[in-house]
Image (cartoon, rainbow, N blue to C red):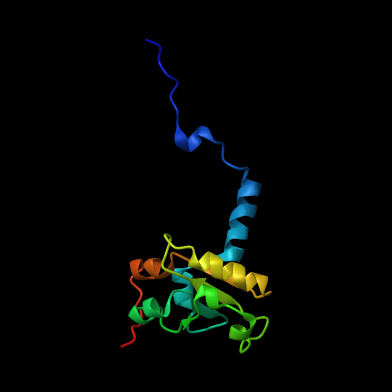
Length: 135
């Protein structure tokens, strides 16, 4: 019986050159931040943290200091209190949720600077950071 060629999923597709990998990963940091960096930056500010989940989920628990604005409600009117240069950092439920992506698209369409907090509230909890609950 003939032997099948061995496959190595990790090396089957060659890695990008170092220069292209540097460009790719640098670009990711222009679009994304993580829970650790948000936690470390909350006190100093410089951005508005938007929890884009439903008001009910927000009440159950959210990052302290976050503003609840569900992605479907992101409009120019909803943002009028913020300057056009305000950086928004959006998060949703976590990797299983695309609400942060939808919010980022809406913000970018409105000409607003935006980054996504990867991991969402799930990542925040996994990191062990405290979260606020409303009664």
